[in-house]
Amino acid sequence: MHSHLSLTQLGWRPFFQQQLTLEEMELVAIQSAELQLAIGRVVEQHRSGVVVLSESGSYQLTQTPIQASDTDKLCVGDWVLFNNLKRFVRLLERQSLFQRKAPGSKIDTQLISSNVDSLFIVCSLNQDFNLSRIERYLALAKEAQVEPIIILTKADQCEDSDDKRQQVQSLDPFIMVHALNALDRDHLIELSGYCKQGKTIALLGSSGVGKSTLVNGLMGVDTQLTSDIREDDSKGRHTTTSRALRLLPQGGLILDTPGMRELQLSACEQGVSETFSEITELAAQCRFADCQHGDEPGCAIQKAIQQGKITERRFSSYQKLMREQAFNSATLAQKRAKDKAFGKMINTIQTESRSRKNGGY
Image (cartoon, rainbow, N blue to C red; front, side):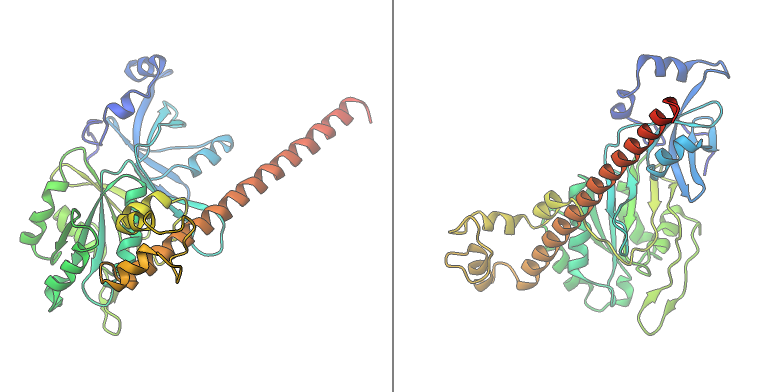
């Protein structure tokens, strides 16, 4: 990545500028090596820490044991302040944030990326094509209040790409949907409008859908390793293993994320409601306020299904995502309450222990 970029090229805007105190602005402007404060954007995230890019170059931030817990909460796309010792000072409030329930049985939230303007939801037109998965990604984008753009890859390998594109468009008439071959430069020109200077794009999609091929095409060079497709299931092997923000030739920034085998939603009720807005509106028309949308009389949703206005698949997808986000949110809330209670107990024990020592016991 270019070593010297302006903050504007990195995506800096008034939203972040307004968060700086007068003292911080003075320390950013000052030339004194001892006092200087710098603004940087997190462009890489590794287990050992984060790499930030600032106007003066790229730096790996060091962390003290006290700050370790803070830097764990950082993610790619964040804006941070750091000092002349390359130590993290503070995180600026995010304009947008993508997060999910941590994969597997772990009860935690995993941060994916922040301060993103557009989300490329990448889905291939081969066996990976799945409307319900696209709805899941849409809910995440709507919750984060980020513009979703659906990219259907491998159009050259699909005989009914127009039909599948129409199926996706029917999920939301206002959403941008592109069916393309990521290896064809002419196809990629369609996406150049999203890649303008200062704009940040994130990519989400399963492993093997062609995200790395798409990044390579937009970058104009092979910055990512891509894997051959396994013949038996049309899936590429998992190639991107860490999150990194890269500068595009058109001036924008692109974030490639590892393929997600599992994207569990949590605290995403608003996003799900907006993704399925026609179902949310119908639910308000049911005869009973607590209608479960099964066999109750006067159910507007069941009536719409019978009339062919919405499909069983779409209603089932809505119910599944609503249940999942509610369950995960409740589980995470319970964990936070337990952690808080445990923290209080430890503090009490430590306080008692100190008072005994001071009392000469």
